[in-house]
Length: 65
Image (cartoon, rainbow, N blue to C red; front, side, top):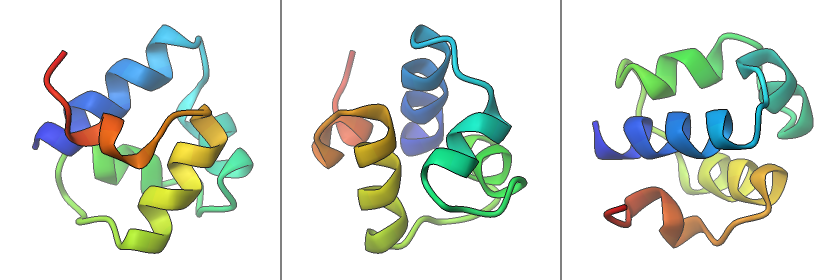
């Protein structure tokens, strides 16, 4: 669940909607919500796409902040 919580925090800090983030990361529009709620586990490819879209290093999703 840490990944999902950090994803949500990074996304909301930047003022980006789930749908806009999904589009920027080339993911299905429901995927971001599923990841944030811990209902899906991200692949390494998905983590990389999200990090690129949010302009952070992939490790940021697993860091404590």
